[in-house]
Image 1 (cartoon, one colour):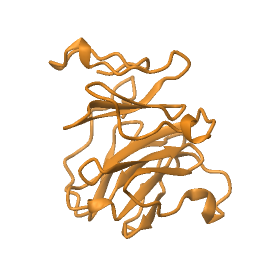
Image 2 (cartoon, helix red, strand yellow):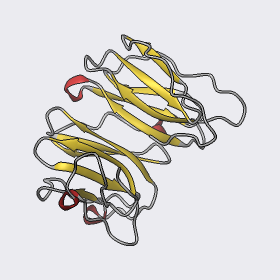
Image 3 (cartoon, one colour):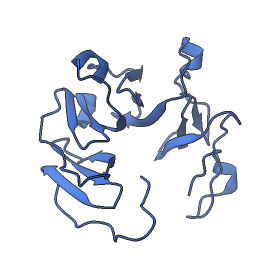
Image 4 (cartoon, one colour):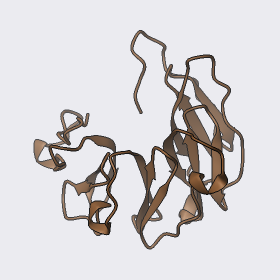
Length: 195
């Protein structure tokens, strides 16, 4: 488990694998990578790795002042990553291309919640809180989820082939698109899961 301050607990991960996140920021997403170990991104766009310095600069070092980063995706053998802002803006790091962002689509105000990359960093999907999935680059359009009132989508994950994805809502329902296989949903309980 990773906490908002970057501390790690359990799952056979030594405490030394915690990521160092500024006290003014909170972790919004994390993943495990071969070369960097635990890689975490904060709401302010800082990138932290547990085992070594990351090759990518923080948003603040690029002159971007934000506190609305919501997700990130490491791509193509760790050659780069995409960072997603709540407004649907995308920041590209490393050797992977930028394919566009939600603000360029003239959709009005939206709330982006998650990003998933297509195989070989050839595109990405952006999930909006209302369940819509927007494709960029060579990512195909497979659709989004229809939500019940007061429900919201929370996360998207692509299949290994990059020809489909799963979308999760706050109640734990999982929908499969493209070549994604439906594996059921998470058990519903009084506390919604976070992804």
